[in-house]
Length: 210
Image 1 (cartoon, helix red, strand yellow):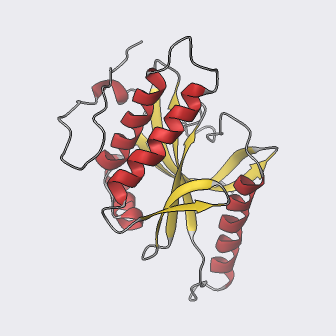
Image 2: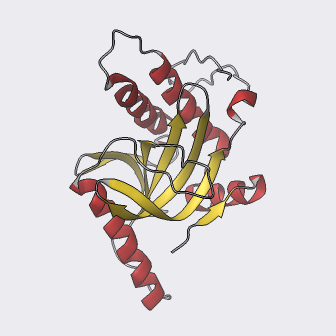
Image 3: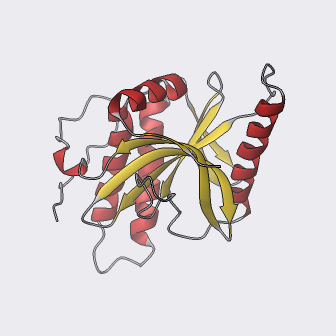
């Protein structure tokens, strides 16, 4: 099934508000934290450090922003995330490949995932099937799980919020919906504003150019 892609500003803003009661700027703040963490690594860091530090910073910043707004920190079988019981949605972060914000391909995780990731896609797929067969009913205790997929190769940064429904060989390969947060070329135009007083960390970010 082809994913529904929201890439125009107006439709992205509408879906972010409807699904998460959020703004694109909030998700961009999380991306900034991830980019700063990855960029802090040197040649002396272990090879796994850039990806781990980016992921850690993303989860941390996401919780700093959204746990003030009715979301809670959560952990599903080792998958760190945030959860909103009113919206019945969960969100995690993922370091992804060039498929981010590319309508011709789907974003894939940069490192192989295990059974917990496969379970995420299975639950989303089962929820879709239930909704098609019972459009007027609500499945108790069921949550949609979304991922903030971030591509950062040191030159270009792109990001999207996506809902995975297909998983194969340790990699996410299909999504039902994709909301573009930072499209190609937008990272360079981001204006670094003074940090708000939210008890979050002040990230020193360099806007990199090709």
